[in-house]
Image (cartoon, rainbow, N blue to C red; front, top):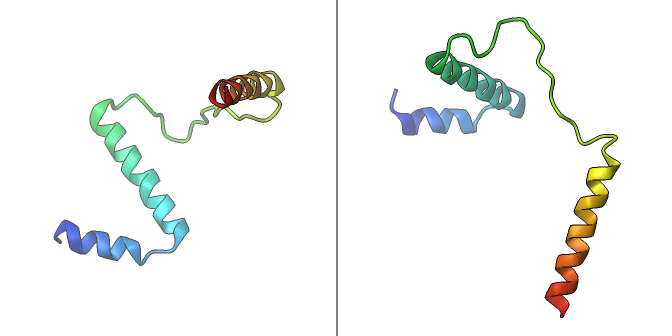
Length: 72
């Protein structure tokens, strides 16, 4: 199947299937690079911005400083 036809079919998929396809492709790419990168059926921690008020405050201060510089 040509890539253009495949992309046309992908566009017709529901969002959840597109997400599953992305996950599948990412996994396949990792397998090609390093077979030990991900281990099947293992959980991996993912960083979340929740409860990171200190980082949020730093970013807000940086944005305020940049806005003040922009406004002169």
